Amino acid sequence: MTETAMTKQAGIPTQPGPREAEVTEAVIAGAGPTLRPGERPTLRLRDAGTGSDEPPRYAPEWLELREGADAAARAHDLLDPLRIRLANLPGKAGLVIHDLGCGTGSMGRWLAPRLDGSQHWILHDRDPYLLHFAAVASPRSAADGSRVTVETRRGDVGRLTRDVLAGASLVTASALLDVLTREEIDTFADACTGAGCPALLTLSVAGRVDLTPSDPMDAEIAEAFNAHQRRDGLLGPDAITAACEAFSDRGATVRLHPSPWRLGPAESALTAQWLRGWVGAAVEERPDLAPRAERYLRERLEACAAGELRVVVHHSDLLALSRPTGGA
Image 1 (cartoon, rainbow, N blue to C red):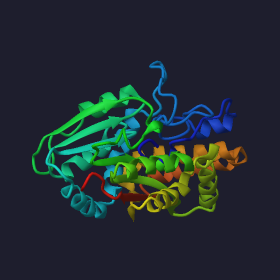
Image 2: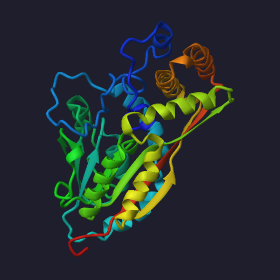
Image 3: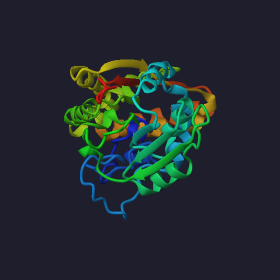
């Protein structure tokens, strides 16, 4: 998922067998296996000179489908300590907020109206199509009616440094950590703590999914999916722990809070797409699951369509309050 890590780095097999093709059929780009082997997600961490002819990795339709669940899941309990920190920043020039891997801008639409004061959002993504959506649909006013402005940047966030973040009030991201390596998380923590900049990092996968009613294959699919998330040195569900350690080791105060998706009959369209992506990634990791996974997915989708399926996809939100710099 972009903005959700659940399926962000899933890649479609080069030549899927017929059963694998059935399992991954009709998955919206971003909801399931859509990348070619070895490719990285929307937020490119290296090779800034991306050609404009590359196909989008995450369809706006998928990001729109999941935005409500994301907004309901994000941890409101982390906002008060964040507001206190931002209120104590030196100067009165307003907030400068970097949103990494912004997609269509859902983080800004959720957070900007919950913070006081004028805000300037710098939206980062490798996909110019998504950046256009994010800019057009960005909020225009803060909680107290102050002005909110935006600019967009396409490029290599992997070179993020304390100098890039100089003057930043806050760094935000959704479903970013689980598609990073340990080295990249260390680099990210170095940049934020070096700049004395707090970071609000939401919707990192926790590696746990609860489905009601349960099925004997639930645990097997979840295990294969988690293994898929750890491909190519990515941390997947281990990322949230690694990020807590990285920020804490650099002197930041870290707060962690659960932020689960709770999907019921009202979210059936999202649940169906999530199921296809979840099972598709598991089958790519373990092709031997395909015959049973086909039956499993079909039955799960039927239960979803009948309003009989409920799913809790566990995530975690992290607020890292770095030690202020510049006399704050």
